[in-house]
Image (cartoon, rainbow, N blue to C red):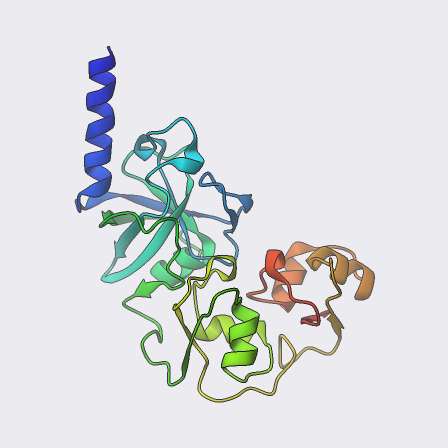
Length: 257
């Protein structure tokens, strides 16, 4: 029995470490919390993948070698490369679940909900890093006129403000750096500074009411206490697209509309 289990495990590891295209279906999810790899995720805003249970081989999923792998999905000639950050408990072996923005970038919208794709694991583990970027055949990646390198201890806010000489604007940052995970930056990673220095401090050009983040505050606190709104997640993200609530910065401006 132990020999059989060992052979099964080796077979799974071979599939994970070998570039073999898998024909299946992709769905999307928008969970916020901690993924099976043990890191904080926000599938509403981050670009990530959740792979089927069949590819997990350790008792502690946080230490599983599949965490940090890259998967490439292809749909109708478009492709996207994503880091594995989570497990999809309900997925059969040939299906995969990806975050909502990744699904939109690959498929065009969330409307279909489920489509047929081919997907594959790429190379070896990246040590849990999301690589800070999403590689696609669409979009404006690769056209950044100004870039800055991440130094030790820096976050997205620090690079955008100190290195890029921009005023902090989360929407502009994520428009220039789609898929970047600000809690998992790597020293030396290149971030896009946008086309020119920014003077905007608001999250939206059409925002009529704004509030500043204080120390220890989250999205809920600002929306309810400072904006005097009843909490409504959909309304919050409509007013503040791209905001990562687990990585707010003191002084950051949020829209109250």
